[in-house]
Length: 214
Image (cartoon, rainbow, N blue to C red; front, side):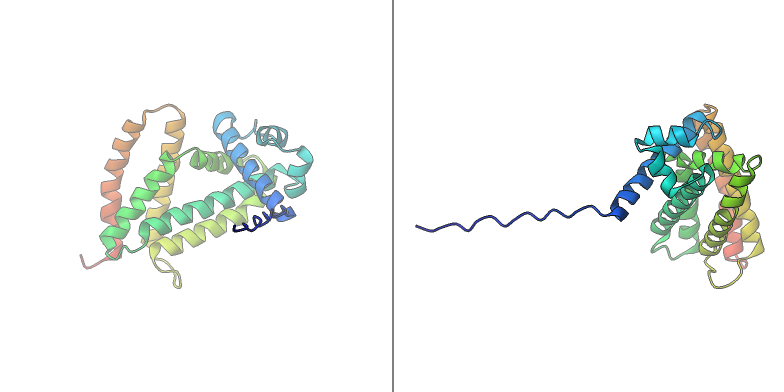
């Protein structure tokens, strides 16, 4: 008769403070985005964020003492997510046409995939009348814009073509406008048709910049 070995003990890893902090940040981000989309910036107070996230006000303010710091964290989180979307879309795209198409497809996804894009628009608009928010988010937005412009232009080690910078600014303005129109209730299919009109112009201009001899 064989004697079976006793089962190996199950090792349960104790949650660290870093784990708990990361979990709190994730809940706060999700709650803040949802409140910004449904209630707007003014109504998205730290008390509401904590209640919606299911965390104590003390736990939230331990990591983010002010509302402005919460908003800066949301902007950073979304910037990282946006960069990952672009990287996946543009990976292995060798030709200028393929890169431009992938970039424009991703721009449209930013508007249609969930509430995060509109939440960042709410934050950016609120900076006009909130000096604390302006002070905390200005360097975050500057770093995001500088990185994305250099990376998307394909000239990370050199200044991007000024025409690319101007065209990207127009595209960003269009996307913010589409997000606002969607929040106003304009049907998505109508916005998609309008985006296609712009896409044809934008694609041609991006390709003209990528290959001036074409």
